[in-house]
Image 1 (cartoon, rainbow, N blue to C red):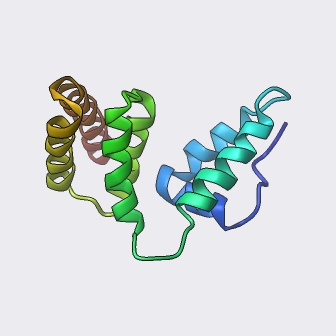
Image 2 (image 1 turned 60 degrees about the horizontal axis):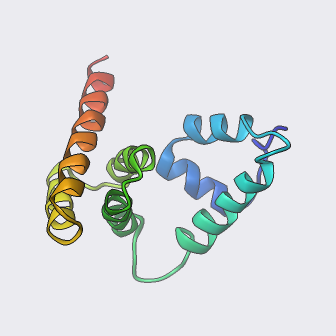
Length: 131
């Protein structure tokens, strides 16, 4: 299955936030078992959620995603969205403050894990920029 031709503004939003290489790789891995799920993710998350018009910017949505994914202990998605937050103009200081807020409301263990994972992502980004 090759879903790289998935059309619509939602796929463009997904690529803008997560990176074109990541999205294309995810779509290229689709098979008979998960192709419908890839369509659902694109239409539901990136269309109905991220594609909504209104007062919340992509930057705002990125901050919310970091806190929500951290509270839910979804590590891989959390790291992906830390990168997306940086692409959407969220600063490292804002990420730090969001994680402090996460720790207060979702618990210190969630905050510890969020900081640990965010530091990994930030180190990777720094290495890539030097690279």
